[in-house]
Amino acid sequence: MKWTVRKLREQQGSLLHFDTTLELEAAVKHRESSIIHLAPVQVAGYFFAREQEILLHCQASTVVTLPSTRTLSPVPVKLDVPIKERYVYPEYDGEIDEFEETTIVLEHDYIDLEEAVIDSLILNLPMRVVGDDELSAELPSGNDWSVVTEDDYQQRKAKEKTETVDPRFASLKALLNEDNADE
Image (cartoon, rainbow, N blue to C red; front, side, top):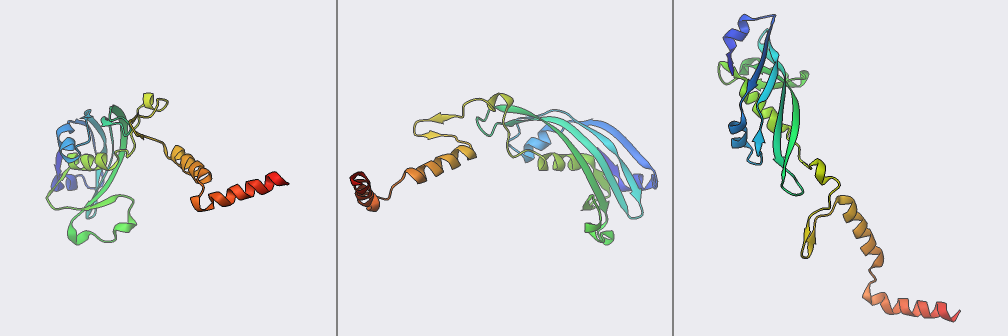
């Protein structure tokens, strides 16, 4: 879904509302191969043109299916992503730190809503995906290997540190034990 800058500038001072559903599964999968499925994306918001900039504020909602980080089984994840972007031409860029919106320099005479939504969805994918049924389930393991949580790893490491005796000091420890037995 594209809007020309000219059309948006004609709305100077007023909001151009939109509420649409976008089919972006193929485009998103092309850019992020770990995605198993992407439901149609519901996008609602507005454009606002002022002076030399165009503002986009919208909310994108969808369900994306990703592989579990524990078992690789499919896990549906609901995403509600706010999108705030500011479009300017290169000569009017100014100070980008002054704005809450992400500043994007226009390379064409149109704004592509689909690209903005795809970028935002990919940037907001979770790093850790665990299904509800996997939270209480036993972690996967096999011959001579197992998946452990960070807490379990730290506990094992601390236990090994206290149980491990340097072999060079083993005979000294035996002497110490003999002295204690004599007293």
